[in-house]
Image (cartoon, rainbow, N blue to C red):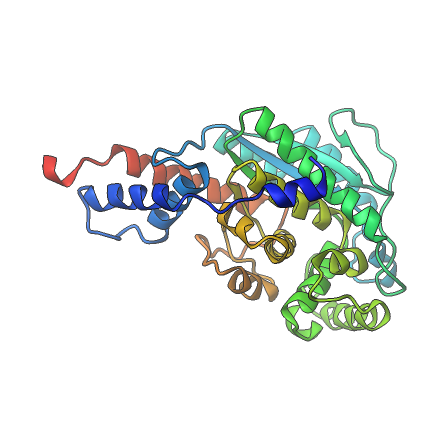
Length: 342
């Protein structure tokens, strides 16, 4: 599907399925509402899939990998070659996201949407729009056309999930410098000063002030429009975030529930929801990132986290842990006896 087709296909979730799932929860042998957010999550899964008996047994984690030119501004101590190295590592099963995904029975698909460093690994999907973005401190990260191409890459992966029968997805990312670009996107969309949202990422606490200054410079130079999420992504975002935004919209168009991760993921999700509010019905929170923007982005999305554990790795790791909780909640939903039967 094209970008326009995808946006036009997204419809709200099914409220009747939500109410039917809630009625089942209320009929079980437990105190009404005693499983809190887990009950709500199952009801939302039911609504997303349009059935009171939702399934999440076919799972996939898609990790979008791309480099960010803002690394030229000294915002991180990590070399951009780490992006390629980790993409290869994910393809070979050696990342934290791989360990967590094996635990939840999910396939991991690493996708190159903009890796700058050469690498040799056939199991990384090569769908690069360009080899990394420009530095946001010196001009737009990419053109609007490139941003939309990255988003359509995310849509393509969502379509592949649908074709493969996936009924629960997780969006992840890998890109040195992307805590700076995601903080920039958050600053613009939330209309907050960069000092309030700048993420520590892989750097030291002392580097955060420098990141905030770089974000200030980027916003002054490119003047992203907070009412146009595509403009924001193109000017101060990254290819990984653009692809994630497209992935979330593509999953919504296919009625596939998708679990969010940390600040990069949630910044992309906020772009998706600002573009098509109904896409929120198909997004599921996992954890609250330890980064400053974590709470702010979840609040803007209207979500409360299932997990608060000080996580800030990215890759989709928090999302994979969220799948464990959703799985446990569905087991309780199906296996707890009815109150009338005891």
